[in-house]
Length: 226
Image (tube, rainbow, N blue to C red):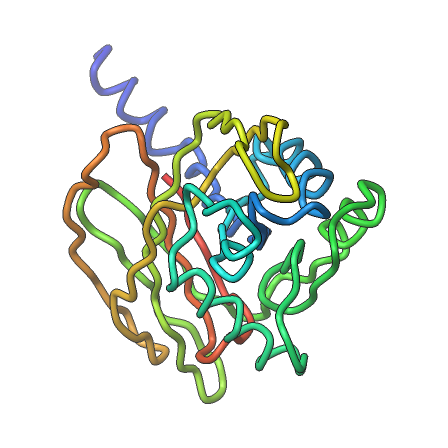
């Protein structure tokens, strides 16, 4: 009787609501850029918000100023150039914060940054995204002309304190959070259910995130984080 009663209660209980896709907030910065420390600090205050996926991308083009960024990779610079094209900019700049792939700002004013994040509008009819173990699942969605890239982003949630030894920021220590360590295109999504397998990260401290994004620096339709 106890087992039957418990089963009845479980079946009658409402299903847990699916987690909404987090708003993706990307910072593009360099340790060699004197304008970047305030934006880095502002971004760091957002990383614990469960409704956000905050990613810190280090770019390469300021390495010539006397300090080679310790986390920068060419693919992160390329991603920022994709946004420049998608957002109709003639060039890239740092610091730059991109919100949901739809809008951008400098990010040095904390109130302006928070307003931009709160004003982000979720994509209509976005697919569900599940990230479980070694499997990524993208659900079906009735989006007209749906086509998107599926990206796997690996980032380090720990605070990374870097003492800058030269260049414009020489002598200061920068604290990075959610610094991106890898980004990989898993494939494409065209409105139908898709499943992708992922391999374990080379560092057990890194976390995984998945972005479903319109091509060539377009809007982010959905995201998930581990």
